[in-house]
Length: 173
Length: 73
Image 1 (tube, helix red, strand yellow):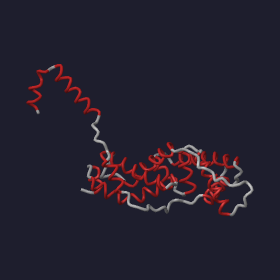
Image 2 (cartoon, each protein chain N blue to C red; image 1 turned 90 degrees about the vertical axis):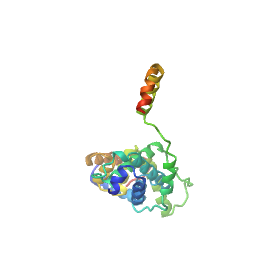
Image 3 (spheres, rainbow over the protein chains, first blue to last red; image 1 turned 120 degrees about the vertical axis):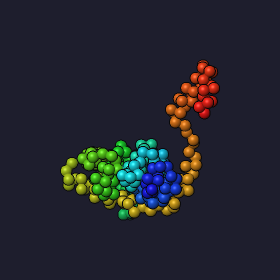
Image 4 (cartoon, chains in turn blue, purple; image 1 turned 45 degrees about the vertical axis):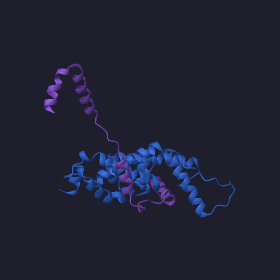
């Protein structure tokens, strides 16, 4: 019996083998979405926990474990973003301080992250994955369980909102 | 918003935010996973509770079934 079939039958050793095989990949995927190491570690555990609980629904013969895990990981990350939808604190610089290029980049980064945090999680994930991580649209669609066109719509809507927010904050591309 | 504006926004994001695709996991998470598995409370599915309640009610209201029940056990 193969590893996936053994996992589907509830074999914990098979689960451990899959965990060790995929934990880095799952972690990296979640990092792209949440951009926070501690949260990404917790969500990696949560992803495998959800996978373990759903082992009986996994088809060990036909199933694609990596794609299934990515879908679970995306849902776990989205749940996390919904729970932790909060502002990134802006650095408190004196208004007339001389800004180095590094400080300007950091300020721009905070402004963009702050604007992104105000987006709904589903738009934010689509924008981050498509425009920052340059993930192909079909891969994003598969991870989110929606069509490629729906991904494009989310990216377009997200960018349009961000453009307005950033313009209001004095940032122009 | 046209393609040009979209590309401008993409360029802005890339200037400010680094891609995370190369983020490395610094430690093995399996020990934490084991802790999570060990902490999993033993849960009985709801239909088992229904069956148990049904059996309890039957025994309570129709005690005559107890010998038959014991025979089948």
